[in-house]
Length: 201
Image (cartoon, rainbow, N blue to C red):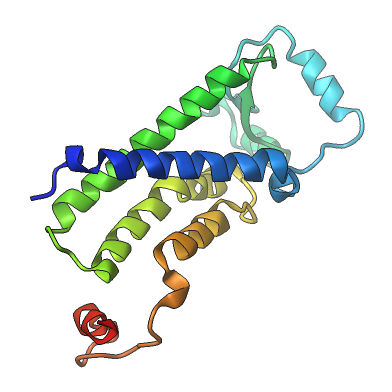
């Protein structure tokens, strides 16, 4: 049986790799995410910041309405205008070291959970294709699909690169692009990974 304690080194190494790769995309290659954030009309951003100067950090719905006390006409009028979810940091200044440290710990927790899924899903001596399918799937869920609910409920653009990053990282790290071109095997619509692995050997 594989225990989580046996995987402390892969967990730590994976956390370091993800931490470095994500910071390169955000800091060294800032254009990677710039298109995810649209610009407000000229002057709107400054006016909004001025109006929120006394508002504490937090998460806010805009507009904030008591829908239960509104008439149908009032609801219809509000729904014709803009609305959204506001994440506010006030003051905007923060400690970069603290943020980076928290993000690194976040990566360790996420990857430890992914490893935990692997420990009870895979046995000792599990073959590479089986490990890939479980760990890559859990990794994609852990790092990317949280943005989908934001797109559904809060209007976050579907063009966000979070999903693309997850797929690309999974393909690179787990050899997705090197998969054998098998579509049907053993009478099923998915490849028989045991036979493929034996063929490789």
